[in-house]
Image 1 (spheres, rainbow, N blue to C red):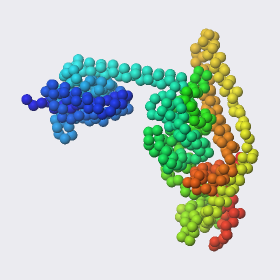
Image 2 (cartoon, helix red, strand yellow):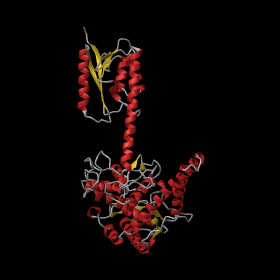
Image 3 (tube, rainbow, N blue to C red):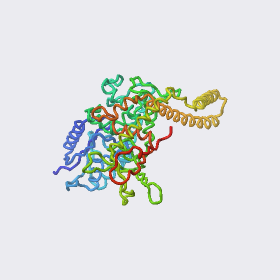
Image 4 (cartoon, helix red, strand yellow):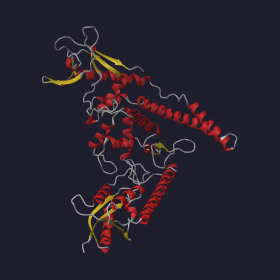
Length: 502
């Protein structure tokens, strides 16, 4: 008598995260069950490390199995008349999936189905109902486990305890003590970001220096952003992108050592918040929404220089200058593009001399700003309003607890106060971040900036992105006026910096 051809299905829970050995053990049991019943396994379907309880998880082999069952054959034409599994919770944990499976396997008469305990008749309504009931119970158990895990995470976070998982970069395996090599790198990256350096530039430097992630991978701007944007580096914790706060409304401080101050982390966070919804160029500039420009500027003043040549009507050309090279000139040249691309094509200037003059002008501005800066930043002007809103909410809660305020009045008033407090708290964080950036600027040693400005980056010089940030903060643009026909001696008086106010 010919053996009935069936398929074996195996799945290991994504929450358990076991390896392939567990899956092969399931297939082995399935083959033994099939042989005991006189069936023959002709194909094995495997969904390893994929949850059957989450609606957004697609189990590719499960879907392929349903298609084969409905067709009665595999893609290569091999006949299929049934399925064997270890247990029904390996097959489906959602009633909808079990219904689709039951519909596919009973699409034709004579199909067979079995688990480790023996064969089951899915054409019997009672058997199908029990299978659906089992899927419902399984789903309820999964939800209870998920709720317990969420409560456990919340409790640990409120107690300031570290979480498991991959070792965070910057800490030793105990997740509490700072790593003496990695922690300074994270701290310097934060300070560089506040100073205007781009994620791309820092990640590239780490790659050149051979720095690896805690998993041993090369750094990318995305992985670096995850690290420096994590409040863990300042001793705080977040769940679902919200800071974990205590009863007093302040962030809970973790038991691990912090790498940077909360003010420094908030300064970095404010930088990233300002970039949301925009394309970020490799040098850190915020581009247009969904704009795509993968080029990193190779020259200091790209985008800052404007053509000052007069048009026939007396107005300036004002076209952004581009960079070109000439065979008889070692240095790069800033030129106004031709008329076909919107320029006048009638102005060019030696690039290294322009870069040198504007660099000196920007450094002089930095030295002037350092002399005029104040060491003590001003206080947040809305602190009294914030404290008053918190006090009113506390009083309202006390009165409601004592029964002196109705439910309608309490919940309507409390909701408005909570919105006001949340808005003011965000403003306070942005203000603190702004002060941190100002403090970083005012405490910057301009003499050290000047020393590193003209050094090559591989010899400790400032990265181009950092220098361009200083230029951007000092200048709106630089207008270059024509020097006449032919090659004239470089004249800095023909360069007009347009300074920013303040």
